[in-house]
Amino acid sequence: IAGITQAPTSQILAAGRRMTLRCTQDMRHNAMYWYRQDLGLGLRLIHYSNTAGTTGKGEVPDGYSVSRANTDDFPLTLASAVPSQTSVYFCASSAGDNSYNEQFFGPGTRLTVL
Amino acid sequence: GQNIDQPTEMTATEGAIVQINCTYQTSGFNGLFWYQQHAGEAPTFLSYNVLDGLEEKGRFSSFLSRSKGYSYLLLKELQMKDSASYLCAVIDSNYQLIWGAGTKLIIKP
Image (cartoon, rainbow over all chains, first blue to last red; front, top):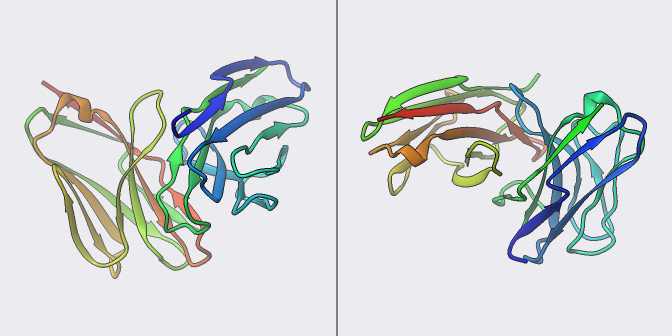
């Protein structure tokens, strides 16, 4: 692994189903982030983690949960998917736990909820 | 409210120069980023400005005026591979990163 990876690449999901998007980084970065990107809107922060064992809510956290059991992994779970969660999801990481640090992004997961 | 404004789309010619503007109204300011995002790919870091003035990095330069709430990204000697979206993002007083919707740059031969 080099950098940050996400799985799956894309997914079509029935409304009401539970789904976990996976994110793994091998850069030993402290901070990790989950964003969603929708046409015509900027990246919107869903949840973040400044270090392993801690998480925080971003701008649009409702309907999503995260965990950070270790430094490398930061999964995002949709407990009961709804069509408005159709989006492209990006995971990112940064070396420090503040906004000054460059963020490195994964390739994204394209999720469609029907 | 917090707001970052960028043009939705711009067109330029290969070999030319283009300036992409970003204006922001945020609760405080602690720095500004520019990222590049090719279609279907992840954003990648281009530049970071926290002080007024011009930062040059090869064919790309980024300018900041904090008093005017304004930044621009200048791309010189445009190449076809520069066709992408360019995202402006501001760190506000709470150290949260606020993203603009991005400017789609189309390069024509």
